[in-house]
Length: 341
Ligand SMILES: Nc1ncnc2c1ncn2[C@@H]1O[C@H](COP(=O)(O)OP(=O)(O)OP(=O)(O)O)[C@@H](O)[C@H]1O
Image (cartoon, rainbow, N blue to C red; front, top):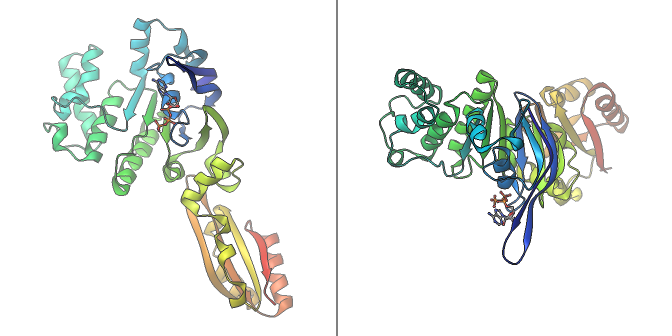
Protein backbone atom coordinates (compact mmCIF):
# COMPACT_ATOMS: atom_id res chain seq x y z
CA UNK A 1 0.00 0.00 0.00
CA UNK A 2 2.79 2.41 0.92
CA UNK A 3 6.26 2.34 -0.56
CA UNK A 4 8.81 4.86 0.62
CA UNK A 5 12.24 5.18 -0.96
CA UNK A 6 15.18 7.28 0.18
CA UNK A 7 12.94 9.72 2.04
CA UNK A 8 14.94 12.63 3.37
CA UNK A 9 14.11 15.87 5.13
CA UNK A 10 16.61 18.56 6.02
CA UNK A 11 15.44 21.65 7.93
CA UNK A 12 17.65 24.64 7.30
CA UNK A 13 17.78 27.25 10.03
CA UNK A 14 19.86 30.40 9.87
CA UNK A 15 22.97 28.84 11.36
CA UNK A 16 22.61 25.08 10.78
CA UNK A 17 20.95 22.21 8.94
CA UNK A 18 19.02 19.50 10.78
CA UNK A 19 18.42 16.16 9.10
CA UNK A 20 15.10 15.17 10.69
CA UNK A 21 14.50 12.17 8.39
CA UNK A 22 17.57 10.50 6.96
CA UNK A 23 17.01 8.49 3.76
CA UNK A 24 14.30 6.15 4.99
CA UNK A 25 13.20 3.25 2.78
CA UNK A 26 10.16 1.32 3.93
CA UNK A 27 7.25 -0.75 2.60
CA UNK A 28 3.95 -1.05 4.43
CA UNK A 29 1.49 -3.72 3.25
CA UNK A 30 -2.22 -3.12 2.70
CA UNK A 31 -4.40 -3.44 5.80
CA UNK A 32 -1.56 -3.39 8.33
CA UNK A 33 -1.33 -1.42 11.56
CA UNK A 34 2.27 -0.27 11.36
CA UNK A 35 3.87 1.40 14.37
CA UNK A 36 6.77 3.84 14.37
CA UNK A 37 8.33 4.37 17.77
CA UNK A 38 11.10 6.69 18.88
CA UNK A 39 12.06 9.15 21.57
CA UNK A 40 11.40 12.86 21.28
CA UNK A 41 13.39 14.35 18.43
CA UNK A 42 13.88 11.03 16.60
CA UNK A 43 12.02 12.44 13.59
CA UNK A 44 8.71 10.56 13.89
CA UNK A 45 6.38 13.53 13.42
CA UNK A 46 8.38 14.83 10.49
CA UNK A 47 8.32 11.35 8.95
CA UNK A 48 4.55 10.97 9.21
CA UNK A 49 3.95 14.53 7.98
CA UNK A 50 6.10 13.80 4.91
CA UNK A 51 3.79 10.94 3.95
CA UNK A 52 0.92 13.30 3.09
CA UNK A 53 3.29 16.16 2.28
CA UNK A 54 2.31 18.34 5.20
CA UNK A 55 6.10 18.64 5.07
CA UNK A 56 7.78 18.70 1.66
CA UNK A 57 10.54 16.08 1.34
CA UNK A 58 14.05 17.25 0.53
CA UNK A 59 14.58 14.01 -1.37
CA UNK A 60 13.00 10.61 -1.96
CA UNK A 61 9.70 9.19 -3.18
CA UNK A 62 6.44 8.12 -1.56
CA UNK A 63 4.00 5.85 -3.35
CA UNK A 64 0.55 5.22 -1.92
CA UNK A 65 -1.61 2.67 -3.69
CA UNK A 66 0.51 3.05 -6.84
CA UNK A 67 0.27 6.81 -6.91
CA UNK A 68 3.48 8.75 -6.53
CA UNK A 69 2.56 11.35 -3.91
CA UNK A 70 5.89 13.13 -4.26
CA UNK A 71 5.35 14.10 -7.89
CA UNK A 72 1.79 15.48 -7.55
CA UNK A 73 0.99 19.13 -8.18
CA UNK A 74 -0.63 21.09 -5.33
CA UNK A 75 -4.06 20.61 -6.91
CA UNK A 76 -3.57 16.87 -7.44
CA UNK A 77 -2.28 16.59 -3.88
CA UNK A 78 -5.49 18.10 -2.50
CA UNK A 79 -7.48 15.31 -4.18
CA UNK A 80 -4.98 12.60 -3.17
CA UNK A 81 -5.15 13.73 0.46
CA UNK A 82 -8.78 12.63 0.59
CA UNK A 83 -7.37 9.11 0.52
CA UNK A 84 -5.02 9.82 3.43
CA UNK A 85 -6.73 10.63 6.74
CA UNK A 86 -4.76 11.99 9.65
CA UNK A 87 -5.32 12.36 13.39
CA UNK A 88 -3.24 14.43 15.78
CA UNK A 89 -2.17 14.48 19.42
CA UNK A 90 -4.08 17.70 20.12
CA UNK A 91 -7.02 16.77 17.88
CA UNK A 92 -6.87 19.93 15.66
CA UNK A 93 -10.64 20.41 15.75
CA UNK A 94 -12.51 23.52 14.70
CA UNK A 95 -13.59 24.92 18.06
CA UNK A 96 -16.46 27.04 16.79
CA UNK A 97 -18.09 24.13 14.98
CA UNK A 98 -20.19 21.34 16.51
CA UNK A 99 -19.18 17.68 16.40
CA UNK A 100 -21.42 17.19 13.37
CA UNK A 101 -20.01 20.18 11.54
CA UNK A 102 -16.40 19.24 12.30
CA UNK A 103 -17.00 15.83 10.75
CA UNK A 104 -18.83 17.39 7.78
CA UNK A 105 -15.96 19.77 7.06
CA UNK A 106 -13.82 17.50 4.82
CA UNK A 107 -16.99 16.45 2.98
CA UNK A 108 -17.82 20.10 2.30
CA UNK A 109 -14.32 20.64 0.92
CA UNK A 110 -14.69 17.56 -1.29
CA UNK A 111 -17.96 19.02 -2.64
CA UNK A 112 -20.26 16.27 -1.30
CA UNK A 113 -23.95 17.32 -1.65
CA UNK A 114 -25.75 18.16 1.63
CA UNK A 115 -28.05 15.11 1.78
CA UNK A 116 -25.18 12.67 1.21
CA UNK A 117 -23.06 14.62 3.64
CA UNK A 118 -25.65 14.39 6.42
CA UNK A 119 -26.03 10.65 5.89
CA UNK A 120 -22.27 10.09 5.94
CA UNK A 121 -21.82 12.23 9.07
CA UNK A 122 -24.44 10.15 10.91
CA UNK A 123 -22.71 6.91 9.82
CA UNK A 124 -19.40 8.21 11.12
CA UNK A 125 -20.89 9.38 14.41
CA UNK A 126 -22.27 5.88 14.96
CA UNK A 127 -18.99 4.26 13.89
CA UNK A 128 -16.90 6.17 16.43
CA UNK A 129 -19.46 5.92 19.24
CA UNK A 130 -20.53 9.56 19.51
CA UNK A 131 -24.28 9.16 19.07
CA UNK A 132 -26.11 11.78 21.11
CA UNK A 133 -23.18 14.23 21.03
CA UNK A 134 -23.75 15.49 17.46
CA UNK A 135 -24.52 19.05 18.52
CA UNK A 136 -21.89 19.44 21.23
CA UNK A 137 -18.93 21.76 20.75
CA UNK A 138 -15.38 20.39 21.18
CA UNK A 139 -14.94 22.31 24.45
CA UNK A 140 -17.84 20.30 25.91
CA UNK A 141 -16.17 16.96 25.12
CA UNK A 142 -13.68 14.79 27.01
CA UNK A 143 -10.25 14.12 25.45
CA UNK A 144 -11.34 10.68 24.25
CA UNK A 145 -14.49 12.10 22.67
CA UNK A 146 -12.46 14.83 20.94
CA UNK A 147 -10.19 12.20 19.44
CA UNK A 148 -13.27 10.27 18.30
CA UNK A 149 -14.35 13.40 16.40
CA UNK A 150 -10.82 13.57 14.96
CA UNK A 151 -11.07 9.96 13.82
CA UNK A 152 -14.55 10.42 12.30
CA UNK A 153 -13.36 13.52 10.44
CA UNK A 154 -10.27 11.66 9.17
CA UNK A 155 -12.46 8.82 7.86
CA UNK A 156 -15.09 11.05 6.22
CA UNK A 157 -13.85 10.64 2.65
CA UNK A 158 -13.19 6.88 2.94
CA UNK A 159 -9.39 7.07 2.98
CA UNK A 160 -7.19 4.06 2.28
CA UNK A 161 -4.61 5.16 4.82
CA UNK A 162 -4.89 6.66 8.29
CA UNK A 163 -1.89 8.48 9.77
CA UNK A 164 -1.89 8.81 13.56
CA UNK A 165 0.59 11.26 15.05
CA UNK A 166 0.82 10.52 18.81
CA UNK A 167 -2.98 10.18 18.74
CA UNK A 168 -3.23 8.90 22.32
CA UNK A 169 -0.38 10.81 23.98
CA UNK A 170 -2.67 13.45 25.49
CA UNK A 171 -5.07 10.85 26.91
CA UNK A 172 -5.18 8.95 30.20
CA UNK A 173 -4.46 5.18 30.09
CA UNK A 174 -8.09 4.08 30.10
CA UNK A 175 -9.12 6.49 27.35
CA UNK A 176 -5.98 5.51 25.42
CA UNK A 177 -7.13 1.90 25.48
CA UNK A 178 -10.60 2.77 24.24
CA UNK A 179 -9.18 4.81 21.34
CA UNK A 180 -6.74 2.00 20.47
CA UNK A 181 -9.67 -0.47 20.48
CA UNK A 182 -11.52 1.86 18.12
CA UNK A 183 -8.51 1.98 15.77
CA UNK A 184 -8.34 -1.84 15.70
CA UNK A 185 -12.08 -1.99 15.04
CA UNK A 186 -11.77 0.46 12.14
CA UNK A 187 -8.75 -1.39 10.75
CA UNK A 188 -10.65 -4.68 10.78
CA UNK A 189 -14.00 -3.36 9.59
CA UNK A 190 -12.75 -1.04 6.85
CA UNK A 191 -9.47 -2.77 5.94
CA UNK A 192 -7.72 0.55 6.36
CA UNK A 193 -3.90 0.71 6.53
CA UNK A 194 -2.84 2.57 9.68
CA UNK A 195 0.51 4.18 10.43
CA UNK A 196 0.83 5.06 14.07
CA UNK A 197 3.56 7.21 15.58
CA UNK A 198 4.21 6.91 19.29
CA UNK A 199 6.81 6.99 22.05
CA UNK A 200 4.91 4.38 24.09
CA UNK A 201 5.72 0.72 23.55
CA UNK A 202 2.47 -0.49 25.11
CA UNK A 203 0.60 1.22 22.25
CA UNK A 204 2.73 -0.78 19.78
CA UNK A 205 2.27 -3.97 21.79
CA UNK A 206 -1.48 -3.61 21.92
CA UNK A 207 -2.42 -2.95 18.32
CA UNK A 208 0.47 -3.07 15.83
CA UNK A 209 1.40 -5.91 13.49
CA UNK A 210 4.84 -4.51 12.74
CA UNK A 211 7.01 -1.80 14.19
CA UNK A 212 9.89 0.39 13.07
CA UNK A 213 12.16 1.99 15.66
CA UNK A 214 13.44 5.47 14.81
CA UNK A 215 16.56 7.15 16.12
CA UNK A 216 18.27 10.26 14.71
CA UNK A 217 16.06 10.28 11.62
CA UNK A 218 16.83 6.65 10.75
CA UNK A 219 14.92 3.42 11.13
CA UNK A 220 17.39 1.45 13.21
CA UNK A 221 15.30 -1.69 13.56
CA UNK A 222 12.02 -3.04 12.22
CA UNK A 223 10.03 -6.24 12.26
CA UNK A 224 7.07 -8.15 13.50
CA UNK A 225 6.08 -6.79 16.94
CA UNK A 226 6.48 -10.15 18.68
CA UNK A 227 9.94 -10.70 17.15
CA UNK A 228 11.06 -7.23 18.18
CA UNK A 229 9.85 -7.87 21.74
CA UNK A 230 11.66 -11.21 21.78
CA UNK A 231 14.94 -10.22 20.25
CA UNK A 232 15.43 -6.47 20.36
CA UNK A 233 18.74 -5.74 18.65
CA UNK A 234 19.46 -2.08 19.26
CA UNK A 235 19.93 -0.48 22.70
CA UNK A 236 17.07 1.95 21.99
CA UNK A 237 14.74 -0.94 21.14
CA UNK A 238 15.74 -2.78 24.32
CA UNK A 239 14.78 0.32 26.32
CA UNK A 240 11.36 0.44 24.66
CA UNK A 241 10.77 -3.25 25.37
CA UNK A 242 11.72 -2.63 29.00
CA UNK A 243 8.95 0.03 29.15
CA UNK A 244 6.50 -2.86 28.91
CA UNK A 245 8.38 -5.85 30.28
CA UNK A 246 10.68 -4.39 32.90
CA UNK A 247 14.37 -5.17 32.76
CA UNK A 248 15.49 -8.74 32.07
CA UNK A 249 18.19 -8.16 34.65
CA UNK A 250 15.55 -7.66 37.34
CA UNK A 251 15.87 -11.24 38.52
CA UNK A 252 19.59 -10.73 39.20
CA UNK A 253 18.20 -9.18 42.34
CA UNK A 254 16.75 -12.52 43.38
CA UNK A 255 18.77 -13.71 46.32
CA UNK A 256 19.91 -17.23 45.44
CA UNK A 257 20.62 -17.83 49.13
CA UNK A 258 16.87 -18.00 49.65
CA UNK A 259 16.55 -20.81 47.11
CA UNK A 260 19.18 -23.32 48.10
CA UNK A 261 17.39 -26.39 46.78
CA UNK A 262 16.36 -27.63 43.38
CA UNK A 263 16.89 -25.67 40.17
CA UNK A 264 16.26 -22.00 39.49
CA UNK A 265 15.09 -21.63 35.90
CA UNK A 266 13.76 -18.94 33.62
CA UNK A 267 11.00 -19.96 31.23
CA UNK A 268 10.65 -17.99 27.99
CA UNK A 269 7.13 -18.06 26.61
CA UNK A 270 6.71 -17.12 22.97
CA UNK A 271 3.52 -16.73 20.95
CA UNK A 272 1.01 -19.52 21.40
CA UNK A 273 3.09 -21.39 23.99
CA UNK A 274 2.04 -19.05 26.76
CA UNK A 275 -1.37 -20.63 26.60
CA UNK A 276 0.02 -24.00 27.65
CA UNK A 277 -0.66 -25.00 31.23
CA UNK A 278 3.00 -25.82 31.76
CA UNK A 279 3.24 -25.37 35.51
CA UNK A 280 0.37 -27.67 36.40
CA UNK A 281 1.49 -30.15 33.76
CA UNK A 282 5.04 -30.59 35.02
CA UNK A 283 4.01 -30.76 38.64
CA UNK A 284 1.55 -33.55 37.85
CA UNK A 285 3.70 -35.45 35.36
CA UNK A 286 7.06 -35.30 37.16
CA UNK A 287 6.12 -34.90 40.79
CA UNK A 288 8.16 -31.75 41.16
CA UNK A 289 7.15 -28.75 43.17
CA UNK A 290 7.15 -25.43 41.37
CA UNK A 291 7.74 -22.23 43.24
CA UNK A 292 6.94 -19.14 41.11
CA UNK A 293 9.37 -16.35 41.99
CA UNK A 294 8.64 -13.66 39.47
CA UNK A 295 7.66 -13.05 35.91
CA UNK A 296 5.71 -11.11 33.39
CA UNK A 297 3.67 -12.33 30.45
CA UNK A 298 2.16 -9.83 28.08
CA UNK A 299 -0.09 -10.05 25.04
CA UNK A 300 0.78 -8.86 21.54
CA UNK A 301 -1.43 -9.13 18.45
CA UNK A 302 0.48 -12.30 17.49
CA UNK A 303 0.16 -14.04 20.87
CA UNK A 304 1.64 -13.96 24.34
CA UNK A 305 5.20 -13.32 25.26
CA UNK A 306 7.16 -13.16 28.48
CA UNK A 307 9.33 -14.85 31.05
CA UNK A 308 8.68 -16.58 34.33
CA UNK A 309 11.39 -17.33 36.89
CA UNK A 310 10.64 -20.44 38.93
CA UNK A 311 12.33 -22.76 41.40
CA UNK A 312 11.65 -26.44 40.83
CA UNK A 313 12.14 -28.85 43.67
CA UNK A 314 12.45 -32.63 43.59
CA UNK A 315 14.79 -35.52 43.02
CA UNK A 316 17.81 -34.27 40.94
CA UNK A 317 17.25 -36.94 38.28
CA UNK A 318 13.59 -35.94 37.95
CA UNK A 319 14.56 -32.27 37.76
CA UNK A 320 16.82 -33.04 34.79
CA UNK A 321 14.03 -34.98 33.11
CA UNK A 322 11.62 -32.10 33.71
CA UNK A 323 13.98 -29.58 32.10
CA UNK A 324 14.60 -31.94 29.20
CA UNK A 325 10.84 -32.36 28.76
CA UNK A 326 10.20 -28.61 28.62
CA UNK A 327 13.06 -28.14 26.15
CA UNK A 328 12.10 -30.96 23.85
CA UNK A 329 8.33 -31.29 24.09
CA UNK A 330 7.13 -27.71 24.39
CA UNK A 331 7.88 -24.48 22.57
CA UNK A 332 8.91 -22.86 25.84
CA UNK A 333 12.64 -22.20 26.17
CA UNK A 334 14.31 -23.02 29.46
CA UNK A 335 17.30 -21.16 30.79
CA UNK A 336 18.90 -22.59 33.92
CA UNK A 337 19.99 -19.54 35.87
CA UNK A 338 21.18 -21.23 39.01
CA UNK A 339 21.82 -24.78 40.10
CA UNK A 340 20.47 -24.30 43.53
CA UNK A 341 21.86 -27.52 44.99
N1 LIG B 1 10.09 23.07 11.26
C1 LIG B 1 11.27 22.70 11.77
N2 LIG B 1 12.37 23.48 11.68
C2 LIG B 1 13.57 23.10 12.16
N3 LIG B 1 13.78 21.93 12.79
C3 LIG B 1 12.75 21.10 12.91
C4 LIG B 1 11.43 21.43 12.43
N4 LIG B 1 10.59 20.39 12.71
C5 LIG B 1 11.34 19.46 13.35
N5 LIG B 1 12.63 19.88 13.47
C6 LIG B 1 13.73 19.13 14.09
O1 LIG B 1 13.78 17.84 13.50
C7 LIG B 1 14.08 16.84 14.46
C8 LIG B 1 12.98 15.81 14.50
O2 LIG B 1 11.78 16.39 15.01
P1 LIG B 1 10.38 15.63 15.08
O3 LIG B 1 9.38 16.58 15.67
O4 LIG B 1 10.08 15.02 13.77
O5 LIG B 1 10.72 14.48 16.13
P2 LIG B 1 9.74 13.56 16.94
O6 LIG B 1 10.38 12.22 17.01
O7 LIG B 1 8.38 13.63 16.37
O8 LIG B 1 9.75 14.19 18.38
P3 LIG B 1 8.54 14.84 19.19
O9 LIG B 1 7.71 13.68 19.63
O10 LIG B 1 9.21 15.54 20.33
O11 LIG B 1 7.84 15.77 18.25
C9 LIG B 1 14.27 17.59 15.78
O12 LIG B 1 15.64 17.83 15.96
C10 LIG B 1 13.51 18.88 15.56
O13 LIG B 1 14.04 19.91 16.35
